[in-house]
Length: 367
Ligand code: GDP
Image: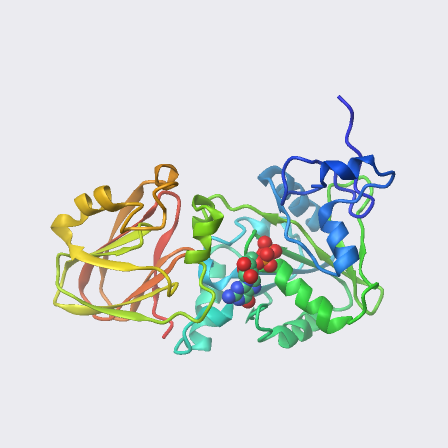
């Protein structure tokens, strides 16, 4: 077998079969003398970074490489999928480098979310995961909110060193870096692609104004993200585009809510009370009796209860049940990557169902 050539931009080995993964280039480009991967091509010609993802093994190599370099690590997570987009074990790899934690997609949160509660919760979660970020910020890369502050923070904490931006796929890392490129340079030809010969660090280099650089690393696919269980067309439905509009349900015990066919919430025990659902506005929510819920799911998954659509429902993982005794009022039951349900009143027993592998957890309400 012929060894595939390397990209002249980032050094990644060229492959022609898996678009969206590292080193992808269309077959036609193989005829050229100097071969450039699609990610580098886009950056060079359109000044725009394209997301690219990596397998776990390759990503571990990149992380290992980061520990050997000196610089500020900027870790981007999705506010809406905070746990699903986490990179477990990052702290073990970065050595003595500082980590700046930036949560993206802040535009999706209802206005009533309190910023300080959100930041506190993120700090606590980070600590639980063994990570002590030097600072925690929120931004909307899409709208530009907080991006100037983020750039100032990066400049302050990097202390004249390089910057490495890491994140799992879909957190909006490319959108964020593209915005920085626009705000900071305004020049088309300032970006170069580069790699470190003899290493597996296939990164894109964005020069900063003091001879140092910001490096974009490929995103890792986190297999337990809800997003990976859905077809791209369905993903559009669960990924909110706009600020979430809370939907309030007054429930009696032994009533059930279905969030499309993606998740289920049973109110098992407690006084009649209200539950506020925060999921993408396009997702349909169905209320039914607990007694009917199993049968309803079986009969209507892919139809009335969608996504997943009829076409893809057979590949969709089974829902796994978890029961919670909620002692305090104003507690969020979070379905990673989907949203959350705020339990308004104390002393209730509920059950939350999410696709196998997708995390469900409690947190104090952010509102
Ligand atoms: P990457 O894989 O981390 O590079 O992610 P992308 O930059 O490709 O973004 C993934 C998805 O999230 C895209 O559909 C973006 O439009 C969306 N996205 C990125 N940033 C934001 C944001 O600040 N707000 C919202 N609502 N969506 C965003």
